[in-house]
Length: 103
Image (cartoon, rainbow, N blue to C red):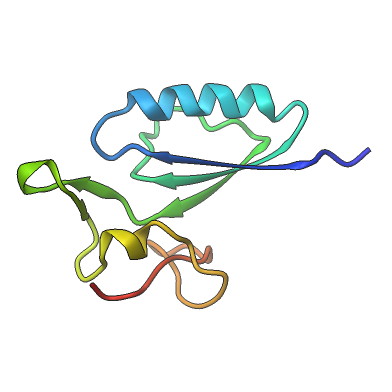
């Protein structure tokens, strides 16, 4: 039986709490779903990613002046970083699609 797809998103470049909780949820949900996690921020090597979870890296957002969201990738707007692209480009040397719109 094919498991239904489930898309999750975690923006975690300001701290790791959201990422740790999201990975725990993704791991539990992967027993019933094909989980894809859109992930905005670097994942520490010491933090295991469940084998059954497909990780799609996105350009990270961070806090700028006056607690506004800004792209951590030069030349990208926060909105452009929010959506991985279906085709074109690569992110951080990956073959995975990413956003490449300029701000």
